[in-house]
Length: 81
Image 1 (cartoon, rainbow, N blue to C red):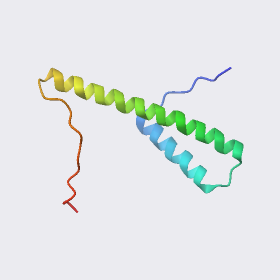
Image 2: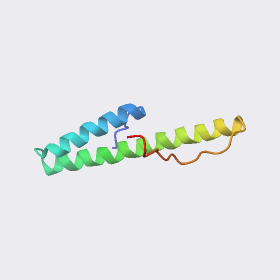
Image 3: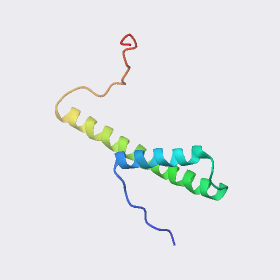
């Protein structure tokens, strides 16, 4: 039987993912535990991607409702260093 996962907020998922990566980087865990952590990391990454996609869709809807143009890709100004 598959246990149901608790849905975390985006911020909680990122924090948990950072914690998993830190544990994996230490290298002092078994292969079996590493695989479990990796699997958890993949699921957390998917959750984060879904949260970001939902946020982008919401922003696009708000822009359309206000009559503004569509989103454009962000390109940071490299001269500000």
